[in-house]
Image 1 (cartoon, one colour):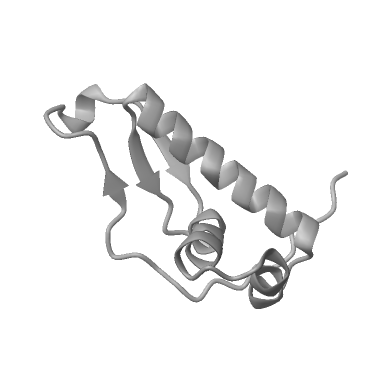
Image 2 (cartoon, rainbow, N blue to C red):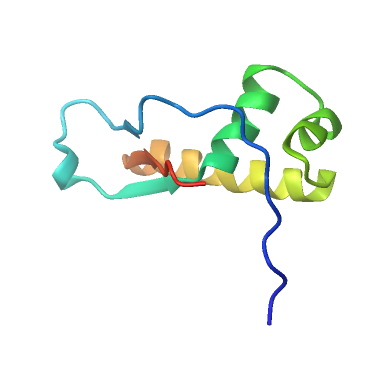
Length: 93
């Protein structure tokens, strides 16, 4: 049985939950789902420019865990951009 998932501190909740390519209806698109912890990781590291160690401290996770969250978010975003998919942000946490 896997360990229970630890609480991850998230201080940002986006108002916008969908991004999609222009000119294509949302119902015609596949979508990629970003979780709130992935959005928070992107915000802290890429937008605010903090170091991974500081980001991990702010999210109350280990640095390797933060790195995995960031990697997962970047892969999903890259897949959406390259594949012409919509990005949906899961608002549950």
